[in-house]
Image (cartoon, rainbow over all chains, first blue to last red; front, side, top):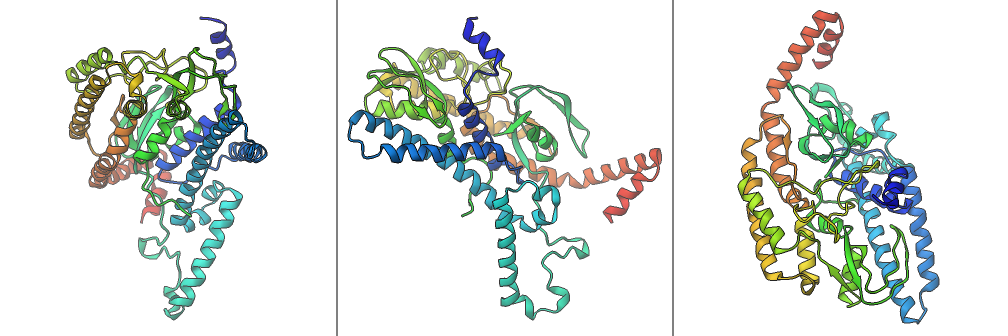
Length: 218
Length: 234
């Protein structure tokens, strides 16, 4: 063990904050792409990442037009990486948007779900829903009997509000040893998850571990 | 515009993820350190081996500015040994040991494809990584054709395991899949997830009656609470 290892152990894994943010963003993206429901908006992380992307674009704009071949190649690398970052952010946002589109009413009617949206996403969800309702009303709903005009009817045991399936199967990997056995509700099954273990299991059984950062979806 | 892809990463997305893996390059030209969004890069000074993310290594390689030092497991002798291991056990071979670290790091940010990666284990992104390296840097990999053949064998053995593993799927239970690769997850997700979901729905009646029975027992024990749950169900 040399001095670098010791330093690395003292200060987390020794990687600079930018690298840690890239790891966090990548994990958030993969987890969001795999999870059946919308996950909380990582506002601090996104503020930092978007701020840096903004700065990097300014750097590129300043240096573009420089004819020195050396600077030119550096610029190519910086721009390639910039595009990769933008793709990551864009795919993350679009994944969230797809879930918001699908479960708008459920999210707007449930305070814990609403709290997971960013300010922009909340605004989007509200205006999207208002537009949709206005359109339905003007095109056909107004001609229905009043009792059939609601879009959020839950009478008769069947809810019109579409919800994500909390029991959908997900691929999960433990990031830390989870001390308590993971219990699958409704069955007499429980199992231990050690760091690095990969399981296929229903989302509801591991949701809290994923939200607390002890596990990630893959 | 909302994304229209199904849940879970698609193969191109897995490849994108894999390009964040660190590999070791042997630079042929100097390149000063760059302030990238994902953290600063180390200055490249030939012929010092330097770890770089795969996307950057491939960019340098394509322009003939660096050579890639293949990970130790991407050699005929290592792959042969791993193939022996894979054929002798019904489970996937072990992934490389995890480094001791206070912050939980996971692929693609584990150093599992650099020059000092363990030679006896396939990392999570083994298939994509070896494909990308063989495509762009086959001249840096000793006996590339033999390696290609072994990789194809490995892939077949592991795919057979993935298919055979479906037999142990049981409704409502968890399935352990340690050692599975990223591309294998991507390919198997729709089928395995579908089977697990389908079996759970078939077993749903049993689970509901079980919950009700537990609710009743709980109601007898604590009084009141169980009854309330029943009221809500009907």
